[in-house]
Picture 1 (spheres, helix red, strand yellow):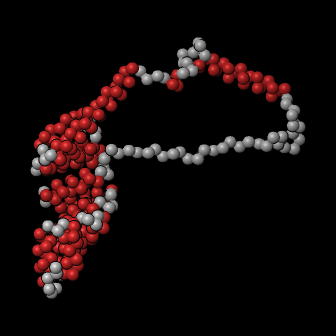
Picture 2 (cartoon, helix red, strand yellow):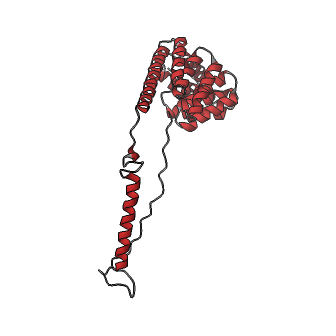
Picture 3 (cartoon, helix red, strand yellow):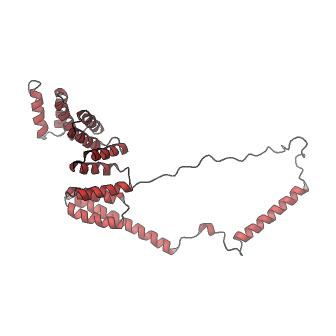
Length: 277
């Protein structure tokens, strides 16, 4: 969830105090106190006492402890109920996550829906619901869930990235680009968002832009073999065979059984000479 911090106020001003005995030329000598000053002091004390008596004394309508009013039983009960509701919602989210790990997306949707009823302002509930809906191919509903999560937390990088994937599948490329870029703006080293943005650029024929994003993805996560493979394909499309070969070799070091990379490496290597082992 999002949180904010209040800004501190400006510097406080220190009161200016005169040095002892600094009365200026012609002033009274130190230690001398005029009777008028004494009388004024007594009057101030009497007035202050009267004010205190009226505001916090026995006859006042306000006691000295008014600034520390106790929490009422109703408020305690309401706070306890809110805490209990949040705990129930979090328990449902954990259950939904477990169902997703088990491949039971349809059951997860139902559980996340129950959590949403309890915590409608929790962006994580909407985000997880979007994941389950997307896995069932219910892209319109998934997009709505991600958008609600972003209304609650606009800098939610994962929600931007996942919404971008839904929009990409729907052919809404420009809007997908906007959300991938928003994800990267929120989390600059978000490897998946860079890779996904590169895929959209490649589909649009913007190969240099695609290459830049794939490079960023591999730098953010050196073990991201999918980004290495995508980068190799872009290099090959631009006749940068040597660079493509290096990328495919990087893929096979990370994912030795990924046959598309092995086949691409063989094709690229043949154009350079003998097939590499």
